[in-house]
Length: 153
Image 1 (cartoon, rainbow, N blue to C red):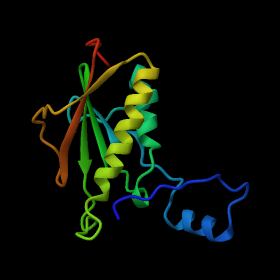
Image 2: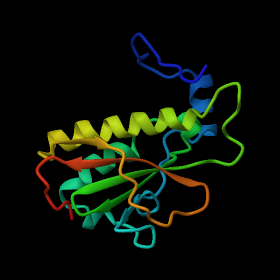
Image 3: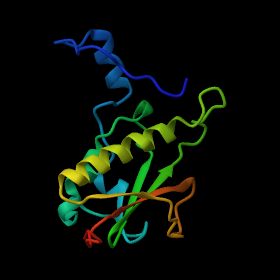
């Protein structure tokens, strides 16, 4: 089963069991901004103060849900494009469940696109590998290109 989605309404108060599970899985913790987002290539971390009009969309990616909170996304901002990479967790993909981190990538990409459109940066996804040298266990997934060709940084 590659994905599970909750339905219904959230309880007013979390149970002790849910609170313990969330704490053990570090569900409310997020990786530092600079470890997820980069400018031009993977050698130049992007700080929140440098993100400009992309801050909202990038924060929506950062806060996207991911299986066991692995946050596999790495984004490189390059001119009017944002390249999405999957940083695979060793031993995480299993044959029985498939690559759940691909589901995480799709959720993050959706959050990015919706937030970008709300920020006045309409665009779409395309397959255009920029050929950047990526860290080990990190693979190109897709590129978001603004339809107006706006320089994003």
